[in-house]
Amino acid sequence: MKVDGVPRRSIWPAADGGAIEVIDQTRLPHAFEIRRLATCEDAGHAIATMVVRGAPLIGVTAAYGMAFAAAENASDAALEAAALRLKAARPTAVNLRWAVDRVLTRLRPLYERDRPSAAWQEAGRIAEEDVGFCAAIGAHGAAVIRKLAEAAGGAPLNILTHCNAGWLAAVDWGTALAPIYAAHDQGVALHVWVDETRPRNQGAALTAWELKSHGVPHTLIVDNAGGHLMQQGQVDMVIVGSDRTAANGDVCNKIGTYLKALAAHDNDIPFYAALPSSTIDWTLASGATIPIEDRSEDEVAWMSGRTADGRIERVRIAPEGVRAANPAFDVTPARLVTGIITERGVRPATRDGLRELFPDMAGG
Image 1 (cartoon, one colour):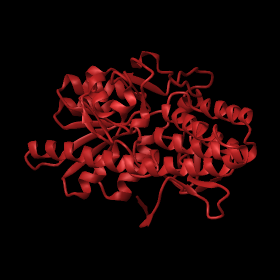
Image 2: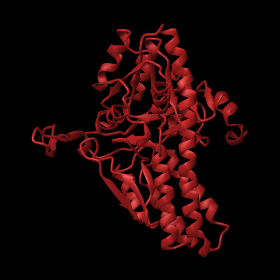
Image 3: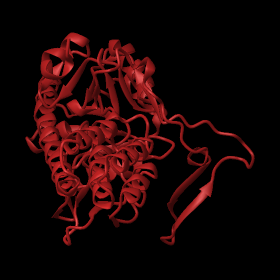
Image 4: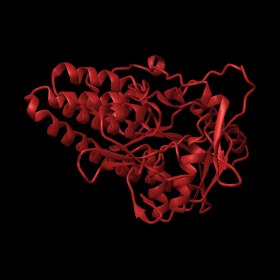
């Protein structure tokens, strides 16, 4: 995608070859800053503090973290320890575990001296695969959008999305936003309702920034407005990403997604989840056992923003001493999901639907 007319990815190798560089997403939308990551500790910290976030991008960053670990100490024990540290950075997004385990699998048969370069190459392959997967998700999802737009009779199709599942959440293109970008670029008339996505406001800060940069018509709304808009006939489709999808089609995504799915179901509005195969956790029969990350109370009690004179300030919005709960994700049951959009196509959110797309991964 482009920032101020310049093609950008969310993560890329540094020019000197000894590090990676990422867009610091904690600074958006008020400042565009690049952060350099050069150690396994750097990668883990960036993941934990949400300098990088979004399931696909977390996985790629963790893969490079393993490459840094191999450069620091390529012994079996050191690599296993690094893998555990990285996996602990964010427990919900399965892409993190998937990417770390993939790099480990690649390195285990090799001599220690060959592991650093092999790890770096594998991380690069994972990054490039993600770009291809997201582009394919965009193509398959755009077909769904076009079909709904044709049924709407030419009026702009109103799409609601929650959190940020655009190119900032992946290496490029994104998951839930990829079909929107593709359809928009194909000339489909559409408009996006952007949930603010409390408490970290990824919709307001990131999705709105992305859509504005790409020229996609959109309107920012508070999280609780979605149900009302659906009742008023102002939403034609909901599309979200996923941080982990169980083998039966249950979808785990940013907190608040489940409520949007309930409202969509009640108003007969199609609800889609867009995700790459790396987000499917074939080891889980359902979403009931997906680990839900609990984040800091401060994210709920405090907010950051730009003041009238241009300063970035952090202010407390809750009374002193008030406790806050902050579960970062919820699980939407497959029965509420119209379909899952992947790099291999679109299928119902069922065990059979996913197996049809991925017979090589689903096992027996």
